[in-house]
Length: 253
Image (cartoon, rainbow, N blue to C red):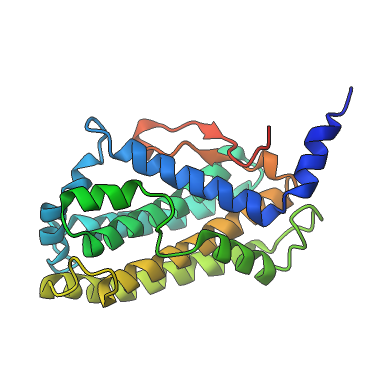
């Protein structure tokens, strides 16, 4: 079989942290676009006035839709992680776990937009703008690759699955602790329309935490697939209820 030397050279020239950051940015931008469509099942989350009112309720109130989203994601994560650990090489289970982490990044970014937006139009502009996340995707990616000592992904050294579990559990604990503070900031209403506020900072911090989980999941998936980022499976960036299919957005073509 003839080897595509140009493709191999391109992969070698593009650092893994760059490939991961580009892939994550593209996935999140597509999720924002899809969920903004009028016929999407989650488009109701784009009503700024309603969502601010809901967010100002206590987190255990069933009408606080943002908080209930958090709890439902947290409740299913341990089961998804257990299924993943039974067969980490299973593309469907690996992609589902990564999907869960990325959906929390997207969800916390929406909350950031609830705080910062000056009006409905500004909210939609922010939501659809891929470069204003509270967490710098490239910085987080670089930091995580350094932390897991993965040496460029391509060395095929398997990452400790326990470390991935620890990162996930820390993210869940932190988000649960911060959620009442987030809702209280919404109740006070003083942070709305401000670029720099405690509420926006809490949402941005959560994005960073979940991005760490996502990058760790990518690193682990690559490490057990011969260090090949091309083979890391994602799910399409649409609601899990819509049965998203497996994709490979880190592939260089």
